[in-house]
Image 1 (cartoon, rainbow, N blue to C red):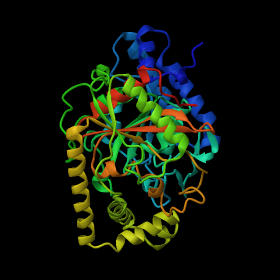
Image 2: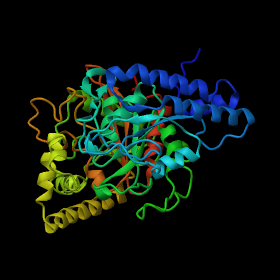
Image 3: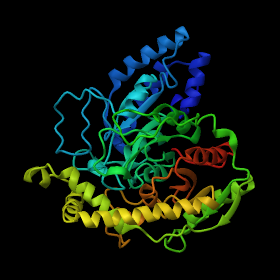
Image 4: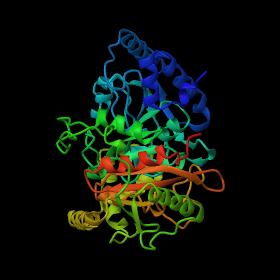
Length: 463
């Protein structure tokens, strides 16, 4: 019998359509998997078993009548505990958030999923207020890697990545302010897309401002396109949301990569030290795209590391999100968050605007770069997953998580679409990710290139 927890959302929907199995079976299997993995990897803040089964029964009856509610009717999905889910507290990994209250509103992406009939399995873990690239918090503890529980799942959408990798739902909503869907997806061996800023509306607005994106985390690019078709529509609560996409991302998947102009930057012009096993896996994927007909050349984008500007914007956001807290609440914060919040509070408006100037120049440089290149390929990360419970790898010399994520946060500054695709493993069996970046509003090209690798049978990952 087919293990329903291994199936993509697309395959589940096909099975529902053909009557091979129903949403109740699929949701029950996903819930059982969630309960089984929770003690070891700690992917969930809460599992909504009873509610999910009620939703699944409703979907099953609609499929029986041949009247599915929407494009994802009966498909299990998880929601990062940064995004509002009606009827349940959104604690953001913090003891400072009061779980009491009415919690009467869905975030825009959650609302679109509900309208499409998706079944909510639970809320997934995040570091406190999503502030760092690994997932541990004073509220929920450490989230661990599906491939080796002694290692981190990455972050800040670590619970979402671990859940998808282990079969606790094929679809997940994550958020990405500096790499937070791509980092854990790369560490856990799944696909994730940070769409163009505004493609997926966000409400309430993030304290980290226009760095923060909502993105799909899935088993493959086709599922991400399906999910983006559902959630990537305007919502009046987000004044910065883009208009309608103008076409289906799912329908655009089949274009392939033949003739695309692809730049491969293995180390951003020598700025990043990449582990040999990571570099080798990424290069093999790049070569495969060339075999599929892409015009590939080694070419580096014209920018130096914008980490200081990113820190100014990020630390100021952390100061803002914790500004309302009293003394005892501050003492309960993650010490790293408390430290960067204090730094952020000392920045002036001129400091902030100087960082915005760097950001604008970076966007200009990348805009010019994409005049000549349809896609930019890099490693997603220069390393594979390190020890759980640490912000930085032991002995790395890095002070903050940005020290080991130099390929991800630049594209939050520029608001470009960027995805990670699992393309192999290192000598310890830990996943390696390839990052695919395109010009703003060309999410379709990112998804097409990733889908081409999946269709060619090149990708690897999961657990």
